[in-house]
Amino acid sequence: MPHMKWYALRPRDPADPRWPLPETPQVSLKAEDAPDARRRFLEAYPSEPFGTPGQPLPNRGAGSFLGDEDALLVEETQAPPAPEA
Image (cartoon, rainbow, N blue to C red):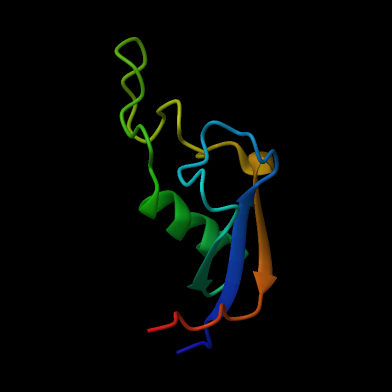
């Protein structure tokens, strides 16, 4: 099994209304590589998963980053600090 790395994901524009966690500037998660990190993020935060009544496509809601590669930055990072108990 390959060693998983940590990746930080954040919107290119900090004011992007699609970002699902307005109180959190970035999300860190473990993944095999940057595309896997993006895929895991999109699975975890599909936002408006079924679009609009006029465009009822799965995973194409107004809040989805799916298909907008440039809007979501993915960078390898260090493991986040352990949460304090």
